[in-house]
Length: 251
Image (cartoon, rainbow, N blue to C red; front, side):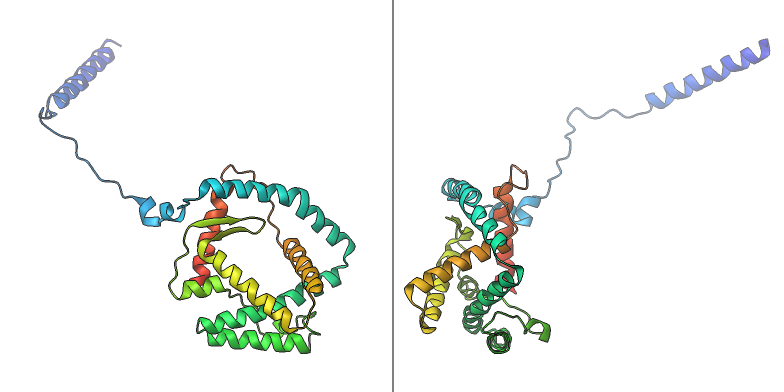
């Protein structure tokens, strides 16, 4: 036992000496030494997040956004719910196909203006087939034949020819847009009006058809204001809209 105790004491003493020697061999830093500064990359600038969130009219836009949310909750959605309850699914689908077929005219014109002649050809083929075999567009028989629906508007046409999107803009009842897209929307609305005039519709019939088109469009849109539960819904929707339009213009 005594021998074991002596051995343990010697081992502890040896380890202590080694540790003290190691500590004393560590060089001291000079008093003038300066910690190196490593620049961090500005990922926000690289990703373009700040520019994507450019919103000089944010105060106005947020008020319109809130107005749209309340109008949607208390006016539009109750009308949409009633529309879906009283309208058979087959009739609802037929109306959606009819309005989509009318929209092919605007898509065709904007495709030509953007020199997208293959898209224009497919769009013309869809309109011709659905207007004839599809009973004035009530049936979509072109899609099963391989003619996919395209989407081109005058806002995209302006973007194709180099017009910038401009400031972000929330339109009453219509929602996210931009200065360029709002201008394009006015042009498309005028083109749709001319189409209805060519069809020989009266003013009352045009108004009635426009109302049904608006109700049908809202019924097909699954978005619900503040349903995300996020405090940043306004920002998310703004970013998604801007990126989506960039993709549409660039394709």
